[in-house]
Length: 454
Ligand SMILES: Nc1ncnc2c1ncn2[C@@H]1O[C@H](COP(=O)(O)OP(=O)(O)O)[C@@H](O)[C@H]1O
Ligand SMILES: [Mg+2]
Image 1 (cartoon, rainbow, N blue to C red):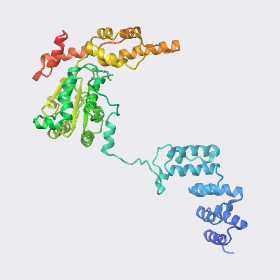
Image 2 (image 1 turned 120 degrees about the vertical axis):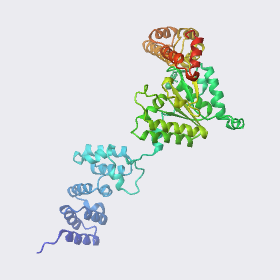
Image 3 (image 1 turned 45 degrees about the vertical axis):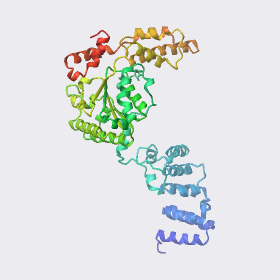
Image 4 (image 1 turned 90 degrees about the horizontal axis):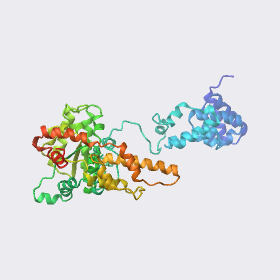
């Protein structure tokens, strides 16, 4: 008898099955032929003809399920396997992954492997943990939202990444002291920003950026945020060091994208903190920004000077003497404001801000604390209060009930907190005395004279 080629034999058997799909003897013949070949496609067709009854015999059913799983025929596995069997869980894991439900898929896979360790599949496991691009998702047409790990290099996303996370909107009320600076900002920034047509009528130029300078921790960043709040504008806080960390040539592109985003979302305030990092004189820079980046930055600033498009540029620096003079030219950071260390009333105001909404004992004398903290920056005062608060929390734990913050906690904390503004003022005094071109540090000299340190 001549050997019949397997596919012909199977074709004949399938034709017979189509004629009598409910014949159990024939079903057994077909299944055995499919498993021996093995031929998963033929098995699939047989299943379509006879339904799950095709695999009534448990041993054949298990072998058939293994073949279908190997083939990736998950739909037919579900047709045959008991709902909570390992094979069904495994098939559902793959299908859910294809739908993009990775978490659910991972849990199903783990259940399947727990029931039947032989189903372990390293490739699927790594796909489930998100280490590779999902082949299952790519294979299935019409699958739900897919997260592609393709080269998605849009500027908008970069911009979001380079900006610091959004914070609650604040106004001048949240900034203690600094009344003169606030008044200046109101007159020179907020009003022109809110009433541009008035300025147009008087032909008063309102473009150009504002540079805030002063000792660290005295509220420059806080003031910039509050200014945005007062203007009712969106606030973009640009982390310059992150822009600088980009690949060579990338920085310029990212910088441009930041300015573009701000223009599109006007009214907006774009705040460049630590501006010396980008416009630093060479002798001061840790890493000098490329000349191209500096010129890109100046070009963007000049663009804003010509077309006041509802975007306000603010900069801040602790080291104004390190900022290149090119940044101070008209239309760039042409208005410079000194943010001084807080004087006694300002320290009082800052302490009150920091103590509000905290459980405080009646004996706390904020006026006394303000007198005792000469030379403290706002950040130093914050540190003082935090240290005292730690004491109060510890006391509360010891006593098993809320022990409010007391003057004793604050006095103890005072011993551990140092004033940090004096060092800055000493350096600034030297620059103000010997390099005060254009009177740029007059405000510093004025401050020192007023506080008897000139
Ligand atoms: N004038 C102020 N009013 C209220 N809090 C202040 C003030 N100055 C500083 N602080 C506190 O110190 C922190 C640091 O201030 P920040 O604005 O970042 O200082 P700078 O930018 O000048 O280095 C602020 O988050 C705030 O808690
Ligand atoms: Mg700051």
